[in-house]
Image 1 (tube, rainbow over the protein chains, first blue to last red):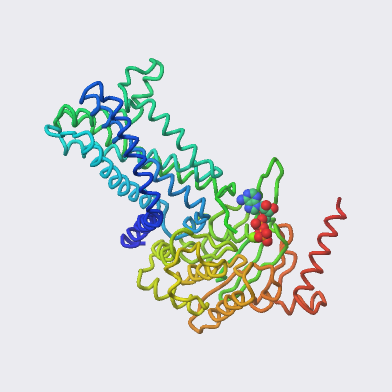
Image 2 (cartoon, chains in turn yellow, orange; image 1 turned 60 degrees about the vertical axis):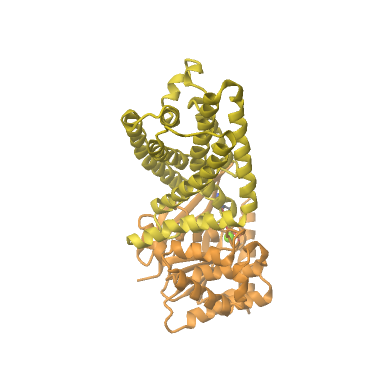
Length: 264
Length: 257
Ligand SMILES: Nc1ncnc2c1ncn2[C@@H]1O[C@H](COP(=O)(O)OP(=O)(O)OP(=O)(O)O)[C@@H](O)[C@H]1O
Ligand SMILES: [Mg+2]
């Protein structure tokens, strides 16, 4: 197979998910409003504590929103295939699992960016936030490199809907809740009990949030951000192949034990 | 070279601590351009065998080759040569037939234009109205969905087609449409197609298949052309052969207890 067939293969997933979004566009609007209301509510918690606190919380809500979309969309793609029973057809198609998963990740990124941008615009207008003095390019770079790690984690999470009954997709929420707790999304990690704190340093989101806040609130330059950017890049470049490997192992296990969802 | 060659194939599933031998030491070969039928009672292992050949299950023992490629070690090469229709047409039901077909086409490296031409041609021959390919699949009847599944399998021009009960649950007219389509595809002079077909309809097996294997409890108990089987068992029709053999086998199994 050449490059053309590979690109063709990964585009299949983007195109298909886009068709699904279009079909259920009403629901998309509902969920988007839910995300917006959620982010607003979280921002309002800080309203009495001053503009800075509002920004602190809003950044948490936005970054967390983006990362969890990446994380979810990947396992959601697998869950959806399992639910429709098409997973056997996708798995027996002559594209490599790599291309298949890259396609799903590509979709997650496109979808996550579009959705998060929409939410961002509304939030910025609502709170009258000014981003003068913020290091916007730095912010973008941090977001992109940390996206890699979350794609990797999403691939690992996708094993759950692949192997388990329809409840597997639910279990990914448990992983997500754990990350939310330890990553200092809405509070500094030093408020956590001492015994949990070491875990915080394992979560890529901890570093993302710290860097995002530095870039957005303190206007930290690239020099300051570089160590975090490098750290996140390395973590991401490790987690994505690890995620693919874990997924492939799970696929092998499923084929050995007959755990793939059967249709017919 | 044979289209399919299986030797001592075994697949066992563990269920609640109990072992089920879904495929139990099956050996057979399918010739190129042959339509090979597999018939047997529910739960006798037909779909399991098809899944092993589709690279969706890894056998516990034995080997299976598709045009010389091992289904476990060379699954990539096998996947390029095969396609499959299962009894339940699995699709993204919310989107249209065309969107589903386009998705499949991309997975097989088939261009959009080719994909559309071929699917319209196939669906047309199956008596499927063109404009309905833009409707959400969930709005189509089961028979129409199955025709889309047939198109999805045929339009990638596979060398080996695995048809697992492609006509089960279809009305007589749709069934005939599908059967005629299969027959026509085999008769086309350019055709280099080999088919493995499972069915519960003995008339269908008789009409479509060059050879038929009867499978019971994961084992092939007999194999031959429909006419060979009829004369071997002294029965007027394949259906009677089936009833004779399955009745006898079941009695023997019961006697063991
Ligand atoms: N993935 C699986 N996990 C556990 N048991 C399975 C699995 N697949 C098949 N089986 C069991 O193996 C046996 C053979 O099933 P199979 O689906 O191959 O039968 P079949 O001949 O296709 O039946 P039908 O005519 O009803 O389609 C059955 O007892 C079934 O319950
Ligand atoms: Mg079956």
